[in-house]
Amino acid sequence: MNTKDLDYFVRLIQTKNFSQVAQDFGVTQPTITMAIQRLEAAFQAKLVLRDRVHNTLVVTPSGEQLAVHARTVLRELDLAHQELAHLTQDKTVLGLPPIIENYYFPRVAAHLQARGMLENIQTLEGGSVWLRKALRDGQVDLALLGSTAPLSYQALVAEEFDRQPFTIFVAANHPLAQRKRITFSELRHEKFVLFNSSFVHDTAFNTLTRRNHFRPDVVFRANDTHVIMNLVAENVGVTFLTDIVDQHRDDVVRLQLVDDAQPEFISSIVYRASHVLTPAQEQVLAVLRATLGGTPAF
Image (tube, rainbow, N blue to C red; front, side, top):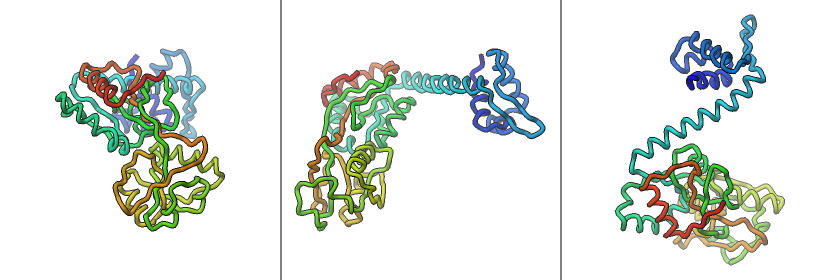
């Protein structure tokens, strides 16, 4: 079977238009028609029904079922291409959320540099939620990810190495700045400056707002810790971040949350279960484990 036929078929399911698919792939419309006919012959099932009078296309139940498997096949093929390409290189693509990058990676980098390995590290920055998908899709070889619960995915291996609480940061001239401790419910009338939804902070924050039965007033979202802290310092709003954030500034104050059963910021070394690590990537993984103390979690 030609996997290109599956490419054409999946796109046809999306567009419901033979001409559009042909245009998207730069081929003739008969090429798309013959591809669908080959698939129908191979599976002995009608996949699509064309109404030429009304110029419509209906996907049959058999077509819907094949589409599910076709997407999986194409996704796995794409992942195989990326993994095999990485196996021919000495580079290791390491996914790093910004807070983890600032707090943990300097220690890791020092050990990598001492072994002459740092120059072969390529980092990809982003929120833990986004990086988890990038890892599954093969864009990343290894990652240090945050989560609010132990990561448990069949496709991923996670080795937890740290847990830290979440805290509140306010401007030094904010009325709450004189406090050392606070409950989350006391923040119901505050304005918030937060990370965007690609960060695990959003999950933890939503857990606490639901538990305390209020809809937060989120005035701004960003993907950079420094931007968030600058906005907090200007009293644009208060923020909710993991305790490992180092603010090192006099215009922002950290407040301890004292709620019971709070979500925690869990940090883990993560990689794909199916990925065959190169010798170089095995060495990077060994440095991560030795430096951070990762413990396999299955």
